Amino acid sequence: MLQLNNINVNYGASSVLHHISLEVKKGETVVLLGANGAGKSTIFRTISGLMKPASGDVMFMDRKLTGKSPHTLVKEGIVQCPEGRKLFPQMSVYENLKMGSFVHRKHRKEVEQSLKEVYSLFPILYDKRHEAAGSLSGGQQQMLAIGRALMAKPKVLLLDEPSLGLAPLIVEQMFHIIEDINEQGTTILLAEQNANAALQISNRGYVIESGKIVLQGSKEELLSNDQIRKAYIGA
Image 1 (tube, rainbow, N blue to C red):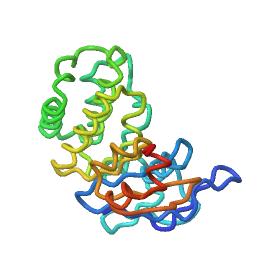
Image 2: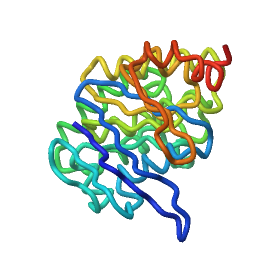
Image 3: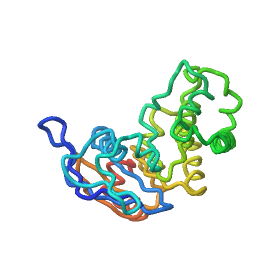
């Protein structure tokens, strides 16, 4: 469904992604594991059109999308939920969610249906729909960020560090929600440092170090890999 073929990305004179090739099949949850600065967010920004690769191609549903604008890619069904949430803190929960549906704004019935689905997934957002996004707790803000992304009706949802800065109990809840979103039909590419929790809900994974894929495999293979356990799980 989504493929990166030999992607190289530069920041000025520095090469930051080196020959990245990966695949996400329809219906899967695939995780990118790596420490902070390994290149996970750069991969996401390249997929979503925010960065242009120096070489290589981004393929989506057998079509080349390299170089397309972020707006076009959202219409195509590639939607990113960024690290740090990037909400509009002064705007209400409802207004933030409506911003997520901007590319579908002409289809009012579909937008209203999407809103009902998000409120069903995150009842607390309905309860707080008139409150400012900046007044929510960290976990509620992450729910809002994911809900806003879902309003764009993604075929592939890119989730960048959704557990970052959240309490352990909220992290557990967040991963259950991500699992539910996948089971309802949305394909997910997940970037995470919380390897154990992410692998539990994933089909497959890739390990990124210094802008290179150094390991890949099924969740069972990665969970049983001593190198992965020592580096990312602490066992």
